[in-house]
Length: 363
Image 1: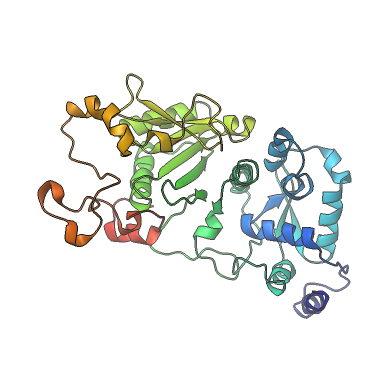
Image 2: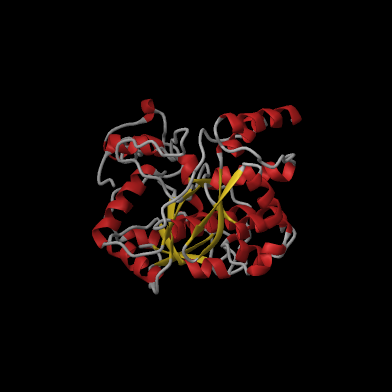
């Protein structure tokens, strides 16, 4: 490993990154820092403090740090001192944005260090970000860190879902779009969108159509809203467009509860309020039930729903025990029960490319 570091230090001078860099011997904690910045793109000093240096702290304190909320005292702590060493060594670069404390991205030397150590997970790294996008990005990363570190969920970032070149720029492809965060699951995958400002009704309709053509038929989309009464607005919009797999919550509620808040969704099977609930907490400690327990296609739920179904003339929906082999498909009501789904939804998954084949809407 020491030899690999010598290669990196030598390479920095050749690439013109500057002479007189401080020689830094990278340890396990340093690689954890560099790997986190590579995954999330850009992280604040508080986020790195909570992620690497405060692993034993309480959930309330770590949540505050994951949203990069900290005071001046953080500049006297070990995290700031180590980040200063890594910056002088040419591994990270600091940035300042309006209304934000110090933020960090990788440098070429930092990404090369991950490559040499066999720890790089992406072909490139983010070099910076527009002032207009930074507030959204830091909040998205805060949500992702809470889900991964406090709730134990596997989280993929937009950077991991899309294809990026060596300069850290996403390669455009057709009309593909990716969620801010993705929670992979064989049966109940979830897309998470952090929405700080309200869009038009028509724009949301296009987004809903795109999402539910891209994810599996038991997947769901979770919105975290950052404007007053945003969650109520999104729920009414889901009801207006009859969207039954969209769940919403306030970003502030998510932050205050450490990710254990309830998400509200619309359901035609829940009378009289038409509201159903979902939580991402590992254990159901409140009144909100996970969406897995409310899946209307689950066989054990069918008897309870029969009175509701009896008076409806909706066409049959796919069930968990529906035939999946082509030779078993028939005609009429026995036709392929998954014919209305894109290939990516049989049986589950997130493949934006398939959306272009079934196409409707788009960004």
